[in-house]
Length: 162
Image: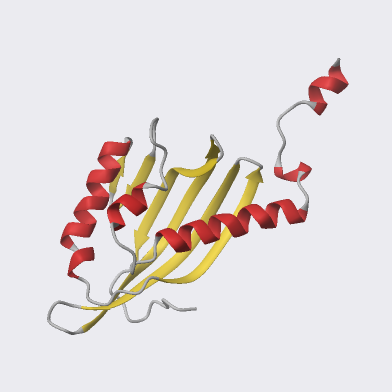
């Protein structure tokens, strides 16, 4: 009975092959890159598609924490209203992306990004930061259940494109 309980227990990353881990990491990278393609329409809806339709979702950004999907959607909509839609010719660039697979249904991604664009006045401008997101596979779909974003400060000594 003890052997059966261990055999039927939840799998961890230690039980997974390198190919399985790489497949999950690659699928998450592809999902994130495709979702953050700023040339596609409906950015708020696309970004919200990364989060579970129900249940708790924790997001920390700009010194504020949200704990529900409606709060998170409000924060993303505010970003798009006050920042995103004012960017001209924005291009989301991933400068690093590391995915650690924790189990067949859990992974964490840490990435850095920059968004070069033109201001409404036509001046070059770049925003960027770092993002850590915890993904869980629910009903066959990968969703973010917890995340933290930090903006790169306007400091020319900070390297934004390693």
